[in-house]
Length: 210
Image 1 (cartoon, rainbow, N blue to C red):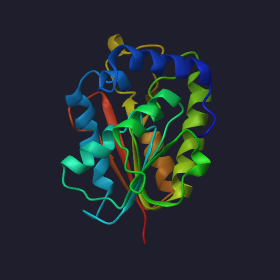
Image 2: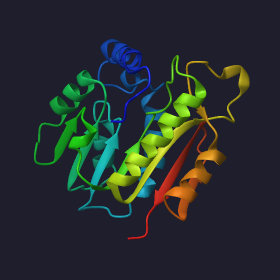
Image 3: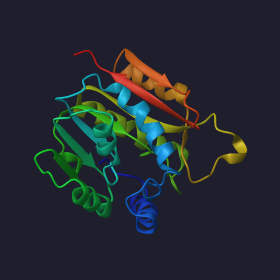
C-alpha cells in the first residue's frame, strides 16, 4: 500500500481493535456487522459481472469483503487483499486457505492488475495527521488504485456533512464534492456518488470504458 502517514500509530490503532475483537466487524473498527455490510453493498455496485472477474480489496483487513461477495452470489476468479497490518493478513490467510483463489499481502507492489478494486474504511482514521496531509495521501492512493484497475474501483469515506457535534478529531471527514470532481477530472467520465444509505458516509464509484 502507499506510504501511510503516521503509519506505526495507524497500525497500533487497528491492531488494538483486532486484538480486542478478533476477526469481526468491530475488529476492523466498524460499529457493527450491519454497518460494515451496508457499506459493502454500496462498494460492490462497481462490479458488473457475477463471475469470472478479479478484484482487489485495498485495506482488506481479515478478508470480510471476500465472504460478503460469495454470500451475495459473486463467483470471482481471484480475490486479492492488501493491508498494512500483518496480523490482519495472517487472519485473512487463515480464514481463506485456498491459495489458488485468494492472495493476501502487506506489499501493494505484489498485486497484479485487476478488473476491480474496492476500499472500505481505509481512509477514516487520520489520527494525528493533519487534514491537508491526509488528503494528499488519499489522492495519491486513489491514483495508485486507478492505475492497477482495468474496469473500475469504488471507495467510501466518512462525510464532511456529518453532524458537527458528533465528529471526532482523529477521523477524516472527506468532502464528497471535491472527491467527485477529482475522480471525474482524473479517472473517468463515468463517476457515481452515493450518499443515501443512512450512514454518515458516502461511496464513490469509478467505472472505466473498456
